[in-house]
Length: 190
Image (cartoon, rainbow, N blue to C red; front, side, top):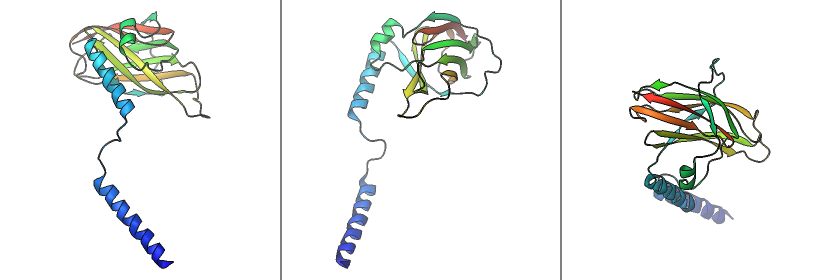
């Protein structure tokens, strides 16, 4: 019996060494995800869009801010909707937003907005910004929670931050996209 135990211990030690020594660094190869991301990138570039992932957070308080945007029709705009491969899980409505009317390219640009998700099974996952000429389309993205989990509230306050040196100098029309109701405004970057 002791030889069986010795053989098992030697096998486990050898297997562990070989696995750790020859393992490929980085993430695992996921062919479906990799091909989908590559196709999405190629389609966006051929349509003239640049895609940037934006960090999204859930702040505690809006700071008593007032809405300085105007209503816009819901849904991803037609040409972008035809271009993206995987449609994001958007909030049902963007209720209001606060964003500066001007900024500088060397500083972050913040967007604070309130939205409603269609059910209590969605959680904030991030946001993506699509830039084409003088248009910015921002799509907040949500993910579906695991079975049995729920969000605390369907009415969410979200803070998006555009990193410094992302936007060039100029005037932009911004569209913050919700499924049924969106918000829009203009911003001048110096």
